[in-house]
Length: 563
Figure 1 (tube, helix red, strand yellow):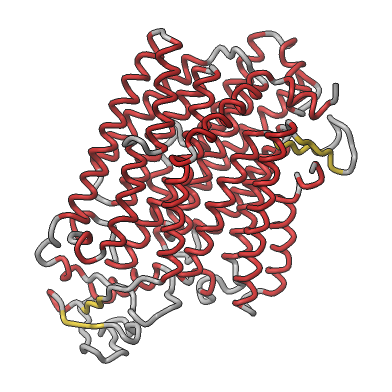
Figure 2 (cartoon, rainbow, N blue to C red; figure 1 turned 60 degrees about the vertical axis):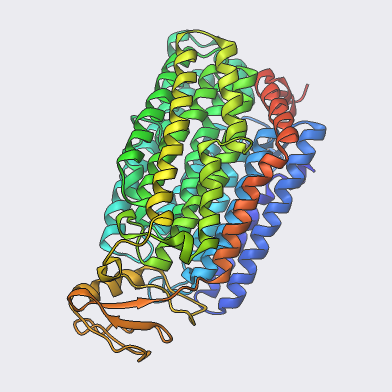
């Protein structure tokens, strides 16, 4: 089984080279091979998780070079679970993106860049989960970030370039800080291998060790969007296409949380910065959820709830007990799935109504009941309504806080409860505005452009943006023409759409149909989130074993270095 450990990284990278050679040709082959590779990665991830649970951590030294020279990859219970959840989510998002037609936007991605970039992103995420040393953890981050730069700015609109620039600057700063931390770690310990560092860092002076811990925590907190290092996220994620935003929100921040879990338990046991982590967790909860309350755009609401609920995971890491680590792992798996699902639903809303602005939405529960259900279930899951998995994770964390006692622990228990209630309020607000109330008068006079009922390969959101711009310019159209254009832009309206003259002369296209792959992928994501509730007992048992293994450290060290 050890030989399977590198494959979740190598398979996407090897296929990426093939896709770059193919370029934009053979679209069906591009889709098939992407789905096949991600399906294979999912199967491999499940096998690694089961093997790690039955036999302990699996490790492999690439090239048969022993540490600290060689590249070490390790799969234990934690990394196996993270690989499995992330592989399932990325596969679902790929199916969703195929329905949206992103991969075939050759005018915006002339070399068929979406599929290769997406597979590179998957390889980077897998590399970070399997990395057995700091250097390859950094390499995994960089692979992931390079791909994310491309995906975030796909289409090249001014809004995406501006948001992408902020994301690039923040990411480069954290990468430089990470490199400095790695260099300092090597200077004081003579290695960057996790298993070797677990012993050698205990011999380093306490001041130096605390400095290294603080630097690594700062790097991972930036990547995980922990307050006060999270200001970049709400302005960056909502501008990307829906599938990109969904996979970013679900996965990229959790890679930072995973890195905090790994380094804090393995390298810095009994860490001195636990109180600082709990303060950051409480601040993330409070600032994130209050920011969500103030928003009127669905994507920005979800972006702020993302920041808020990162606080729950940092809460568990800060307490550093078996119960809190187990609760944090449950919450990471839950949040990857639920947050991704909610952003996929936001993409469906935007595709159907041309906007995610809550003041311009309404009546979706009546006009699109399936869409309403797809939103309601993960929204209640995020709010932690019993017996859903969000409740299971929060209950585990709050019980660990009560058991730990102390001022910070009790403050976080109270903050967790308040944040959960405010999350329920925010989700109820979205439900009332977008789904429950009637559509506001004149909502269709905003130049909203909806997807064609007969277009099975819809384009990127850029089409909707361009059509709205055409409407704003005052173009009119003829109903049922099938080739109507805005008078200032010449932009064609999709064939089969219904066009009418709207308020102030805007052309308005309406439809009620969404591509079935988008609906199917979102539905399966909702079911995956519900499965954590059905399998709550086995999942909790698994995460408790993972927490025990993390805190013991010995199984990991022996798997890498031998007895």
